[in-house]
Amino acid sequence: MKAILDKLDIADYEFLIGIIRSRFNLTNDKELKEALEKLESRKTKKNKRELIQLLEKEIRYLGSADIAYLLRRMFSDESGVQFQEITQDVAKALKINISKLGTDEEVLKDIVEKYTTRKFQSLDSEQQQELLRKSGASKKDTEEFLKKHAKNISIPIMIKLLGVKAVQKLVTDIVFATISNYIGKKAATKLITEVMKKFPAWRVWIGPAMWIITVGWIVFDIQGPAERKTAPIVLYLGLCIIREENR
Image (cartoon, rainbow, N blue to C red):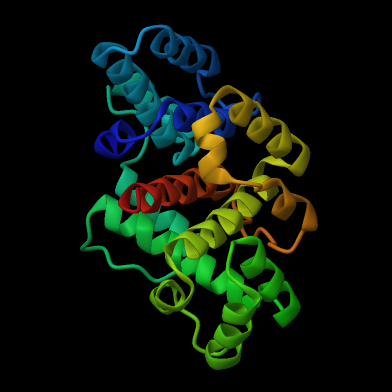
């Protein structure tokens, strides 16, 4: 997980910490915030490494039951489950079949692509058209795509016919809609607004994502308490991997 976190921008760390922050669990919000501020004031490898170590620890904790985590912390230096276990649990909760043989990056990307494809397929035709148009696809391309591939939608086909940018924006909208359901629309709007103000480059990548948060199309289908914390993190990390591949 450290290698994945190392590729992220400071804005991504800020957003992840915003997702993690909660008074209902045992995460060390204060320590995370202090490490982030330290990195923002002085962008050194040491400061980045310290923040990444803290983030990894907290994400692995979120994949654990609180009691199990406390026992690990009391009797061992190993606190929290392995990242591979977290991704497998999230995939299972999202009802996604993924290979256990790929790298962490490949698994994260696979989860995001399969999840967003299924969510897009669950929308009615009118919703699909609006989502595609908001993602930058032309009306003509949108109509032709849905007419020919309504029953056979996949990310590769969408990229081929609609372009990388449009599909990446579509995936981004669905992921952020899901995250907003997890942390609450009001909290999501506040968090996204704050990060956008602080990091203009992040805003350019996200684009006008706010609209999808308010429409309520994307129903959050996680019921278990652990996955309600880890699924948004896993989806966001997978989204960042897709972003990095297309920069």
